[in-house]
Image (cartoon, rainbow over all chains, first blue to last red; front, side, top):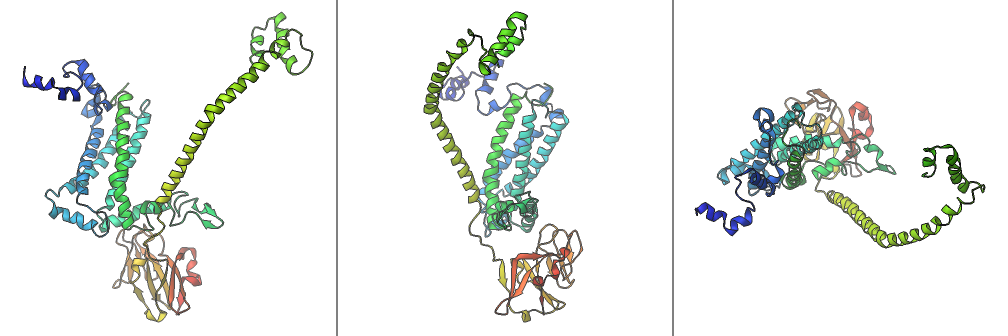
Length: 257
Length: 215
């Protein structure tokens, strides 16, 4: 009996892997079906479906970027404090305080790359007609993921708290002023009033909700930090699970059904 | 509904007419055929009554606690959602007040822009015998321009919009002049800037007496 067989027959191994070695077709299927992560993935994939010339692997690269950003992001959180006093200096100090301060650059480049790959993924799905029934629901999930990615990009932009960040967010969040009904300069907001007192004003509109104040301030930094590090990634994680599972249920990675 | 349709479908001459006659007679006129009347009248009435009572009783027992629970749950969820939304709007803000005292009019020099209140979103300008408070928000996309003393203009660092000392735009993408805040003389003779009211030149509001002080 070899060492490998000894390990495979031990109680510890069998408690983790509840199937025989994947040496035949059946057991390879069982591996996929009994693993919580792999079960999101199709049991079998057409060779043409994973051809690089067809998929560009853009969805896979986007997911890879998400994993990379999660790992580097968590590491960066050990050195970054989202306050007016510390934010800017903490980013600068990363170079000196930490070995491999390049992690911060990896996070930034990864963020740019993810925005690029997710657009290319959408473009590929459009070109191959992979949004058509029965995959139209998954197209919708994908659009939500795209919006979430852009929001992650937007919220992360503020965190270095340099001049570029502050003015970019000032300009970007000005769009929220013009939200119909919910922005105080938007169409319809003037109708929402009780006895001449406006319900939607600069202290109660969508922009205020986003910034935690009337202009970009320390409260904004904290809000964007929480959204960037907790709220949006959680939502993205759930949506990614749904997205992958629907890829499997809707007939596998793209291609004719 | 069920009675007339099957009788119409077969449509055979002799049985069709009496069959069609029975439902109308029960509802409208007493012309009814004697044998047809007791059949529907006697059995369904008591059956329906007993069934309603029993069902009503059961529904009362089973249905209403469920209804109550779901109502309670729904109301709770709505209140929680609204409460969460309200939670995101703080009651206290560490923002500067909207009404600011800025000293006596004599303290301002002709042709000078005072940068002191830039953090509070306005410049005080005395120009051509008028004192006015210009908003520091660029009318293009909302950045804060800088007063360039040597070039005698407000210049926005974001996209290069330029404004004269009067606030009128003359270069770059800004579509309209800077806005003025309301300004007045208080009881103690000090100037008072009120940022809750703004005056836009392109609407002709700069002729409003609240938008400047004559000196």
